[in-house]
Image 1 (cartoon, each protein chain N blue to C red):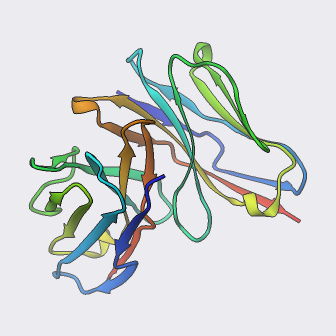
Image 2 (image 1 turned 180 degrees about the vertical axis):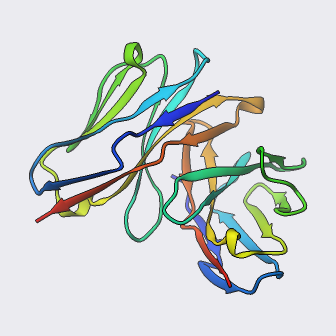
Length: 117
Length: 114
């Protein structure tokens, strides 16, 4: 069965610090997809990234970067030079392509990130 | 990315009643999904709604409690039936963009059952 573990329940840092959010997953499939979402206090879920299991290249998007390591089943998310607007709950999710290609997401418990000014 | 809207954005309902939540997408999508987020918790998939066929429910969710309609490729409804306080949650619909496989979420419906 699929499982996603975000061991860090809450993280608090001072603005401009770098912060890494950990995500460890379990799956028996060789083809799967990993996602990160941001949920700010307003409640909406904002898509950040989708990565397939065959692409282990790290990704950078502005201050955000992702480190995918199949050997340790991890897909960690780093925010560089954090800002107060980064304060949110961040969810890591996993999906396996199932019937008719539907990607059903299994979410981790989320990490609440607070950036203090 | 797809633009998704949900109605209502929030509601307060009495136990024993039912509420129907609407999800509208600005483009045609094959798959739509309904998730539940209980207070302070993560998201859990309720069901997958494919146009033209019965919804597929996840373990722990049944059609009698959460009937779903999917009349066309841009719209779906989720009904929360015979509500109890335990149904107080945020209900979110999501769609998958077939080309990129990215999944986007609506703004959610915040339901409180008293």
